[in-house]
Length: 263
Length: 266
Image 1 (tube, helix red, strand yellow):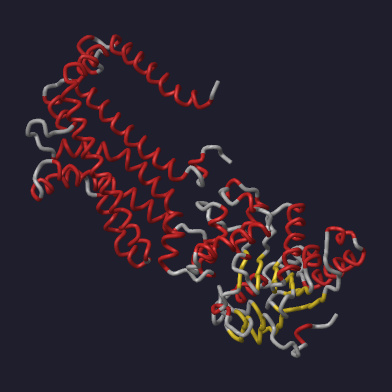
Image 2: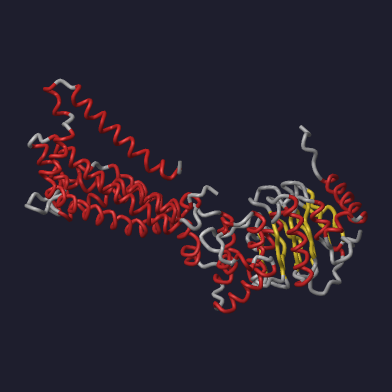
């Protein structure tokens, strides 16, 4: 059997098995606890009843995730160039960069609400903060991980600092940048959803999946919560797929890990 | 065997070292003892010696990648950093994996901001010399190790150098490929007559390629023997079975052994 087909089929088979297991477990639970794992039919009904709401919330969260993620990607390039420029700059800034990642979102959220107010800008800022760190760490690493012999080659060619940056360091950093993008692509939709829950606006039609989850949870609508989680996952997969495709397009010709023929 | 560095009559050597020494810290030992050396234009000089004798250091000094701690080093009268006609071939091919073969050969020309037309002319000429003109659009990962080294050679030749420094360029290749590349390198040298300094671990390779062989001794690095290789040109693979060649290989091996510290000595 075609190994590519197997790689696509395996997760699908696993999903079917999980759903069957879910349904069996549902019936195995005592009737008073069955709400913990809702009947798959009721999950389907949740999609039917709240489909329009979920879709509009998903669109809102997707746009916020894209905006925060895109902003992080752009800013991380500039920040990485700065960090890679000197060991002193790195020593000075790196602790604060880590601190930025260490402060929990639940502490940033109320501060953001005070500064910016609830709504899209705050959601985008939180998403940005969550996506930024893996990007800047990986890209900086890439800019610094240049082969010594390549640096000697450029020195022999009396390359200027700019030539070294654009003709050597930047292309060498590209695979690292895409590694950062792939990690952040997983984090960004979760970030946008969580941010929406914490700092989103509740005014009609301008809320995302976080607010949706908040509403379902306040109403104890467990199937609705599961449905929201599934939609969030789909967003994550979509963003990862987009980023992986971009990475493949950019690197497949020269980088072994993307070329896929394990040469 | 006459010692070349006892011959100051040479009018303008391609490479001239006067009391050149290298140490890596001011209190540390000499990696290279003060040494004097003249290499005439068009000479093909191989440098042999035990590990750690400073072969590669010597080459890096000539290239300007490192500066000598003392003494004077001149390539055609200028300091290495001022030479535009100097090329270096590294131990590994050091091609840029994101560029196709053609742009890889042009890399150093681009750094010099050479016009595209002139770049293309030199790229095509260099790739033809190493017989890879048909692979200009391949990526390095699609090439064999030997082909990659040929591209690396083409990149150096595209500079149209007068001095070519080679740091064990064929060391990572299998013996067959290594012999082939050596023969091709020699054929190109016979047409272009640049001055070559070739660092190697292989006595046979050194004798086959060179007009002159330096054997270095270690701690501190110094020139222990300086041979002329009086074998006829052009040299082809038949030479590898020639008794004169074989006896020279044996003789150089003996000299090398005499300077090589015994590894098992406690």
